[in-house]
Image 1 (tube, one colour):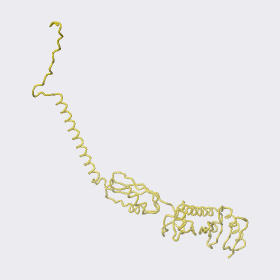
Image 2 (cartoon, rainbow, N blue to C red):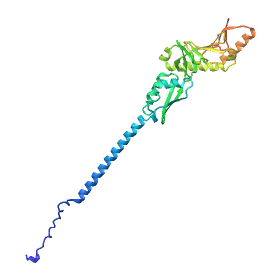
Image 3 (spheres, rainbow, N blue to C red):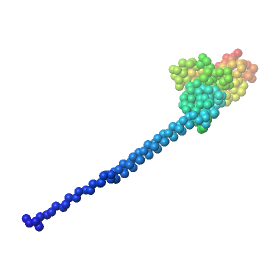
Length: 278
């Protein structure tokens, strides 16, 4: 093979090496940029944390956020000052550190008049307390006398300053509310319904209702008027029996007679009425 026919390999090109002091300039520049970015982030985070600490210290210690008022709305039976005292909230304490959930729990656990309470902050320095009170609809004798709601729930013992111009339900036992709670509530509701039905009739104007009595078998009777006349009604429905009692009392008045009790509980013979005279 002649020299002219030989294929020559391309010459090897050796990469240039940077001179001392100029080694890898692109890599150095990138590293510097990254380092500056990290330092910047650290400074920002540090500044933010510092500002957050300063802000937290300000809101927790500034007199601007000290509680100056605790406003109570929705209370009728309970004075606002009593509800504030029950809450445990104190004027002068910080509005942000006040534990509103704990305050609500204390109110509900302490005050039987309060059915619910909603507490909120009104910045910069006020706590709002919105309460929902229970309403007394009847008096229920259970050993002691209790106020009961319209749902039949006895919720507190009667105090001298509580409303007393309510129907009085007697004959129930405390055990009825532990053994059959719903049954006890239903009986109280039925007694209140009977009291309302009597109040709508003509006899109520002459002989106001004094007491709704529940017999052990669930039968009802009414004590009415200053003479404490007894109307023995038995079981519902009551409207016909009450109208019949009014006619009997009108006839007794015409004769100048007084009844001690009127029995209207004979459901098998509803036209039969027995009168026990004084």
